[in-house]
Length: 153
Image (cartoon, rainbow, N blue to C red; front, side, top):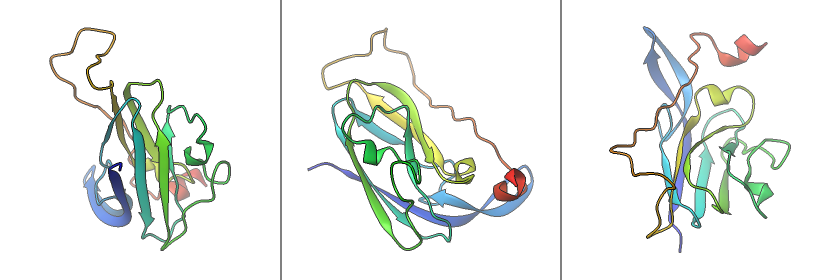
């Protein structure tokens, strides 16, 4: 069996830049929770949508070999996950290691729905460089005091 990473899509009040507003979050976190896996592992992520927006998750930079349906772009590789519904992303990490990220792939929800995707080497293998003293994922994101949909319109 493979561990399932649960992702609950919910609204939460968040304060940034001295401004509080309700935003779409994953597991009530902003940015969303990290996903840590290993090269060669099967990644299973269950996304449950509790917000009024349709949503999908894109695994940015992941080579979707024989698993295009798990890539996440709404209306391209999948229908978006509607309110009250869920979807299970199920794919194998093949030939990749390093730090990527995942994000919403519909509308401008990617402004608040994103997080790190850390792909470790296979067990008993290493990165092709000297092991660093410490690894700290740094995510750059955009924060809008306005509604991202209003900004894009």
